[in-house]
Length: 153
Image (cartoon, rainbow, N blue to C red; front, side):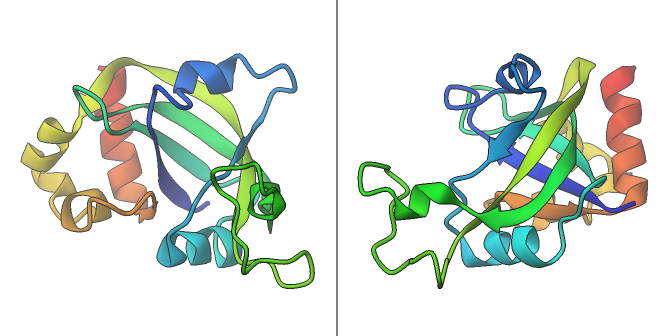
């Protein structure tokens, strides 16, 4: 299994919003960074585990987990002129942006804040620590295990 960290602003879409989805899953869309897009398009697969990270908030933290339930497909927002994610350079025959669908798996007993992640020796090489602004990032299995242990304690 492959693991990822997906960032979301809780005011826009929180872990609780994902858990409340009527269909049981939600579209992870609006990614407009080429490196993150490439991860979504080329590497994220059905069954992959996701650390759900609340960003751009008072205490940025990993708050729970999700699972990828639909592999990459063109993000429909890029074709919608009314969307804030509209891209005039994209077309259905040549999409530029992709999304995946995820489903809620767990909410941690306690959030694992970024400050704690940075202070945890087992996590010092984590992409979140080294390249913090990336919204979709790979997570090593050992990092996944450490974060789960911290969040469930």
